[in-house]
Length: 193
Image (cartoon, rainbow, N blue to C red):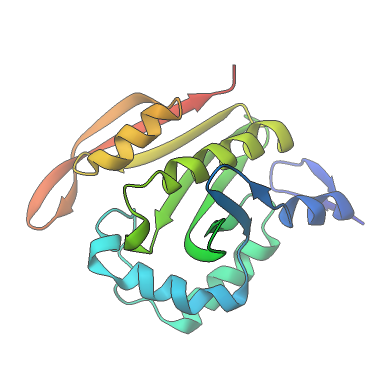
């Protein structure tokens, strides 16, 4: 069976299923396909104000029904790949990441990541998962550019993205309201070289 995405790119179903089931081990993490059984933990993290303040959407009203609908959509999408992030040694699910809105014609995607377990913040797990996802995007999917957005107050993430090779492309001035203050949103990109 052949699957065709909105850009008209053909995927053979077996190859596509293989890509969707990719597992990648890096130095500290293993990224694997997100499972339905991961959703309760994901919901808890996304609703946590300390985690949510770094995310591009407000998930305070997220519920099981909405998250399961999103999971079904991501599972069959040819333009999105979502992964659970596990701390490799502990075999513990600590967050998630993904490539979204893949434009196969332009060979680009948006990247997103959240380390939900705050015990793993600031220890390199996010950077390690980002590096693993970049390798997958460039080597397995054949993408040539990855973009992301990050708020100016997320200094830890900005530093991590720069270490992974991302460069500032654009600054959206006072674009994001958080805690009654307007903050800049920084658009970053990484090109395959």
